[in-house]
Length: 72
Image (cartoon, rainbow, N blue to C red; front, side, top):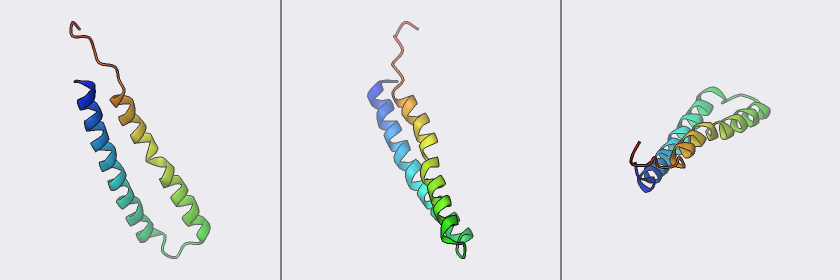
């Protein structure tokens, strides 16, 4: 796959990932953390705010993979 196409697909996947992750994380917080103390909110949003980086790193690693030579 050409690098430009891989980067386009990866960019679209990251945008979808961030949007879907934000919606799900906010919905879970609204449903589960309504009456929780502030420090639980802080912990939840700190963890969920950093957790999306793991799948994004996998996508970025895939995007930056060098192109295979044609002979292989």
